[in-house]
Image (cartoon, rainbow, N blue to C red; front, side, top):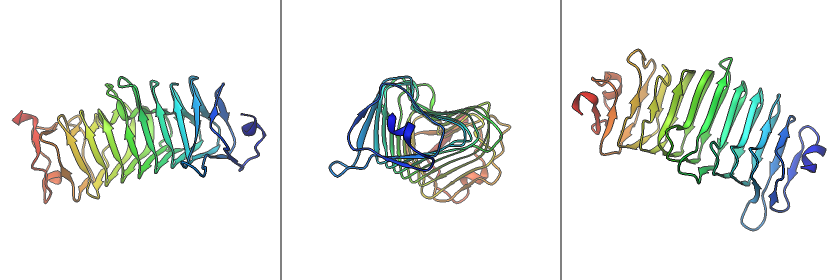
Amino acid sequence: EDALKAAAEGDTIYLKTNVTLSASLGVNKSITIDGANGSDGKWTISASMETVFSVSGSAVFKLQNVNITTNSWYAVYLTGAAQVTLDNCVVTGTGSRVLCAQGATGSMTINNSTISDGDANNGTILIWECGGGTFAFSVSDSTLELGESTTAMIWVSGGSIASITVEDSKLTGVHGVWNQKAGIGSVTLSGVEFDVTGAVLRDNVSSNITITGNTTVKTSHTLISAASTVSFNGYTAENFIVAGSGAWYAYDTLDAALTAGHNLSAIRTYSEK
């Protein structure tokens, strides 16, 4: 806590031991926290308050080589034009949500990390009322293992954001991406493994969806759940494979753009149900 207050813009704080926080840390300047050590690879930050890191303004905040264990609502909560990156981190939460962006116009990037929720009734990455169509959320080379709640691993509620990109990652939980009354410019899924009990893409996710790179889906529910007014402009499905025994597509007729030249034999329409 003292190190964060003393740090200058652009500094890197190197952890030398495991840390237990007694209060939430506000971050309003560009800082990197590096938890690399010579034994098991990462030092651990433990916390139990509502929010561990609250990132605001135009801060560029990076957590790297860190374990975060928390039963708080948010391990990282960002607002404003802040940009947050988690690189080679393991975040384990038992709170209602793990990561949250509210009213944000910046970005959140998860790379080479594992985000999990130990509470089976909760767990989501919440993008909430972000405006201006500029906020970007991306995941690469990571694992999201979030609880058996009625929400989603990536839950967008209200506002307007630029993009969601998930590459070379595994998502395990209920719904994959759930859009509740928000505008999402584009969704790109490349090399993603979905193991879900709900919909992969739920409720008007975007009119610009691209699925490439040997993305696989295992679900007993719905592949894509959306209102009939959604058009899949620019939708591609190269190497798209459905690995589940009964993935359901929420239209009476499969769109030709989804079926042409692709292995979608496991997908059944609601009219077949």
